Length: 341
Image (cartoon, rainbow, N blue to C red; front, side, top):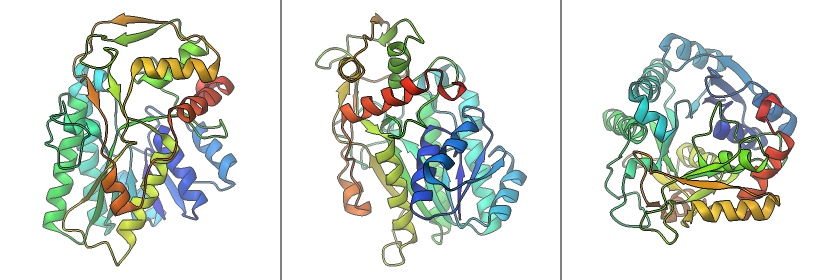
């Protein structure tokens, strides 16, 4: 049994699909702060299997202990937390509370219950402004915003925990920029309020839910002046979690000298305007945009060196930008108002 915190969220719901399809039993632990219970209904429609649901907050240690005992979980995949760079600059304490304190309480509960296998949802933002590209896992960690610092702090906590007790099996997955949706069109990214990430905003402009896209800065040292990121299809990302879980549970390879830390990215960067043009192509819809000032905490370019994931997890991304945009458009056109449709 796998306990998936934040399992009704964007990445969590797609990972639940892959876990269930792979034969795992799944219990979701979620407070629905930035997610929707309808996602789990759709997960059942896709897989024919129903994930169990326990509603609760990771900051409530007693609730996490109860969930671990009730589910009889032997491993945790930890997605629960806040994830927007701009919002973290405006509300840093909320990010430290949800991401750092929430993970601390989860780890205490796992320790109390003897559950010692964890896959943690980290972020490429822990690298900060790259000294060199592509980014390898050995790149210095110097996050430039509270969101990235919250992920870095949790990573440090996990490394310290592992040093103190190496019977834990911990994988730290540093995501680059998840986009796209399940090919069924039943689940996808459905941010509450104004989207903080590029692809869902582009999708909402294409479907005419929003009028225009703000492009935050066009004076970066990049080919077209807009920010460059490594976009990864959410299904590829979800499959990376299964590979990490498999590696941690394999008795022949699970004696790692430290937490198993890998990048999950494609190794290729696309600019904001690259994404806009690709989305227009697959949707047949215009995506009007305007140039706006840079956002605090943003960087010019960020893309992965994904070799270590291939070496240690036998994982690599398979889906390109066109597939990412096409699946996003399929989801958005079927669900113009997200799960509220």
